[in-house]
Amino acid sequence: MRLEKNFIDEINHENVALEANLKRDCEGQMFTIMHTGKEKKSLFGGISLAKKDGQIRIKALCKNCGKEFVLYDSATDGSKTKEAPATKYVKLAIKDRDAFKINMKYNFMKENFKTDRFEGIAIDIQDDSSKKERRIYEEL
Image (tube, one colour):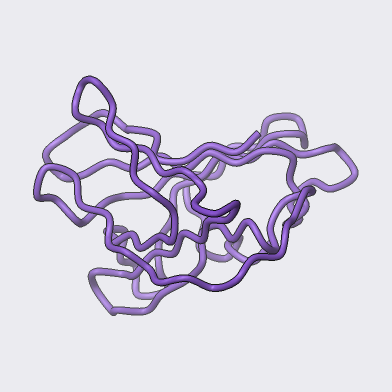
């Protein structure tokens, strides 16, 4: 699992689900999020990401050191991949905020635990002004 070395506060749910917060090697925990999908606004001001033209790629850039890593790529991650052309990344900003803590949640078949062949993924974020996480992406 490519992000495993960046997990902190990891919670293993009986080897079928995994939840963890992300940090960079520099110990940074605030990230700018870039994506190739489309943004959907909710009734209460939230934003979620959806696939655009059948694909989505989501990456994070550390606000501390600037390094980046891929959070999710629908062309290569999960058990139901679908090749898609690369498209331009767009920065996610919610209410003028663009730095977030990231929490990843995965569901696995037991034999694929802690691999990139997960059955479902959820990406939750939290900015400094809020104590509440908000889900920006979910694929089941």
